[in-house]
Length: 268
Image 1 (cartoon, rainbow, N blue to C red):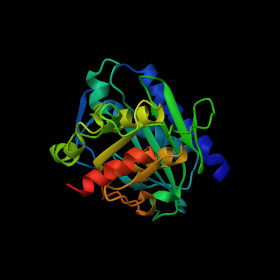
Image 2: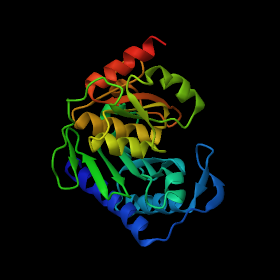
Image 3: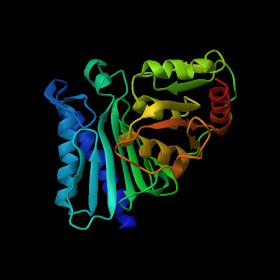
């Protein structure tokens, strides 16, 4: 199964990418709310259903957790948990006119009560740039199969870019102690933050309340590229248990910048 995991993840990324490219903007709200209580839009649901259909069609031994539908059992003897966000950055998708990043995040965990370190494969596709990355259990690779190694040349400086999720007011308060010490930015989605870190245009990314459908993809891809992923106290996120009911603190990317951010947040 391990050999096939990468194939499955890549094919799911291709499914999402094809739907985005071949469909008109499907940004209307469906009238329902997702598992987190947010209003869903048509493209979210369309991509989600296509991936679920793919898993069923191939009779893969997966339980599934998705942002829209929540947790579902679709196999009599599941061995893995497939977690995905079909359209992270849905507001960017609706109003961004192709300028604001949005994408598909997928992570496959081994076992039915896994830790974040138990990811055997993951993938991430950002649709406005047509860039995507996969994680094979040890290394992160780009769409050309090249191993990604994050730069370690970043310095703690007020011009060094870091991307934080500032959707919540509490996040502004949390990260304010870093202002003017490093350059805080926010692109409207965690997809944008991950895109910039993996593209080496941002030293690190962070969140106060990262959702379960996103955390595994971010942790695995950044670790696989030689970065570190910790909570706001500096604890390795790999030791955290994955739970559909939890949100996660995150600081991830260049070791020097992440450790500096941890030191500042501890002193708040």
